[in-house]
Length: 186
Ligand SMILES: CNC(=O)c1cccc(C)c1Nc1nc(N2CCN(c3ccccc3Cl)CC2)nc(N2CSC[C@H]2C(=O)NC)n1
Picture 1 (tube, protein in one colour):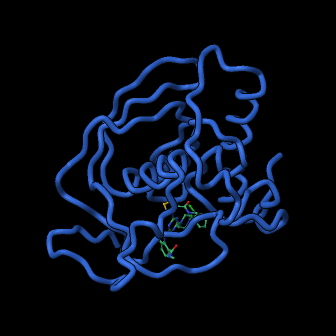
Picture 2: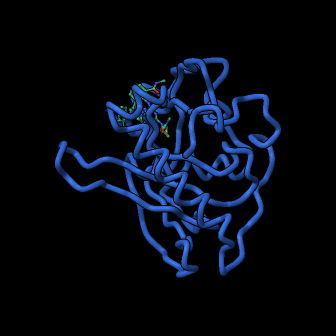
């Protein structure tokens, strides 16, 4: 079972390296990793378990955050209401953005990261819509379009596979500066 101790923090080299593609069939070790990453996100979003285990809540996790330099990410984005099914629950292998919108988007309150133990204020400007190609843990290939919050989370996690941190996207001179055509998500 993964805890916060398993998550490497900024300064760890794994967060600044390019992760390797996985080949199929996945090893037992990689299948276990996929399950543990999803379980961590579930635990982190559970009020009792997260309290008991001291977990920070997250909706995405990338293998390099566990010092595993492999192209695997886990997403667990809750539905709008308590009893709704998740908006997105998926482990993606070798995800690749194949196309994206011209329009950009950012979160009104900025972004947080389980590997960054500090608040980094500023707008993180990302593509507002992306088309993603990826494989599931069985090796089946998918090509899907995402927009809004799921698109933001996916870009944040795919950045981790390429050694990019969310604050790399923040305008250092003026963190709150925004072009007028960037969509702000509340
Ligand atoms: C500095 N200001 C801020 O962080 C920030 C501040 C306000 C609003 C937002 C929206 C912010 N931004 C932000 N909030 C989140 N969460 C909201 C709370 N939620 C959650 C919390 C508790 C239970 C269940 C859940 Cl679901 C967990 C996810 N997550 C991310 N990111 C960036 S993309 C990857 C994703 C991630 O998982 N980070 C660990 N950013």
